[in-house]
Length: 81
Length: 352
Image (cartoon, rainbow over all chains, first blue to last red; front, side, top):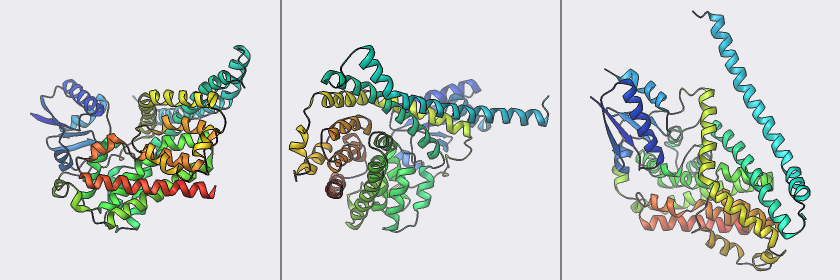
C-alpha cells in the first residue's frame, strides 16, 4: 500500500496539493494512506525548502509548487506496483 | 498514424501559437497602458462632466487611473518575473551558497534572494534547509532579508509610478541593507539564539531540483497562475491603498505633510520607519499611498524608508520565524534591518 505524505504547515497550498494527490490516486486506482506532516522539524528532515511537499513511500517527488491532479498522476504512475 | 513531418508541424504550430499569443498579449498591454490616462480623463471629465481640477474630480480620476495602471503593471511584471524565476530554485541557491564564507556569501545570498522564487510561508523550511546544510547564519539572514524586501510587486509599482531612478535606488538599497544586516548578524555570532533543533536536523532524502523538466508552456502557465494568485491576494490592500491615495490626492492641502514630515524635519525618516515596522501591508497597498504623499511634497528618501520598513518586517513573518529563531535573535534582526533602512532614508534624502 502506497504511503503518501503532504508536507506543509497547513496553508492553502498544502490543502490543494492534498486534493490533487487524492484525486490522482483515485483516478489511478491506487490504494494509499494519506498523512499530513505539519511540524517544521519533520518537514525539514525531508530536506525540502519550499512547501508544499509531496512524499511517496518516504521519497520526495515534488516540492515548492501545487501541481494539477494530472501532473500528480504523471508522477505517481511509474511508482505503482 | 503520425509521420515525422506531422509531429514537426504540430510542434511548430504550437510554438507559433505560444509566441504569437505572447506577442499579442504584449501589444494589447501597451495599448491599454497608453490609452489609460486619456480614457479616464475623457470619461470622467467629459462624459460625467466632473471638473478634473476640483477635489472630487481629481480624486475620482486618480482612483480609476491608478487602479488600472497598477493592475497592468502588476500583471506584466509578475508574469515576466515568474517566468524568469522558473529557471531558479531554492535548492539551486543553496547549492550555490554552499561553502562560501561570510562577506562574499552575504553578497551572493542577497542577490540570489532577489531572483529566487520564494514565498514567505517557506521562510522556515528554507531557513532550516540552509542552516542545517552548513550555510552560515549571517549569509542565510541576508537571503531572508533580501527576498521580501526586493520583491517584484514593489519593483513593478515603483517603475510605473516613479520611473527607473527610484526603482534602481530601491533595489540597490535593499541589497545593501540585506548584505550589511546579514553580515553584522553573522559577526555577532548569534548562533546560540537559534532554536537548537535546527542544527540537529538530519537532512535525508534526495535533493530534487524543481526547475528540471519545465517546458515553456509550463513556465507560461506558472506565470499566469502567479499573476492570478497574487492579484487575488492583494486586491483588498490595493483598493484601500489607492482609495487612501485618492483621498490624499484630492483633499489634502498641498504641503500639508511636507510641513510636518518634509525634508527639513530631521526626525521624519525615523518616525516613518517606526510607523512602518508594525504595519502589515504588502507593497501593493503602500505604493499608491506613497505616490500621493510624494505629490504632496514628502521627500523620496523618507517615503522609500517607510515602504521598506512596512514590507521588510512584518508581524506574520516574525511569528513564523519564532519557530526557528529565539526572541533575542528576532529582535536583533528587526533592529539591524531597521537601522539599515533608517540610514538609507537619510542618505537618499541627502543626495536627492
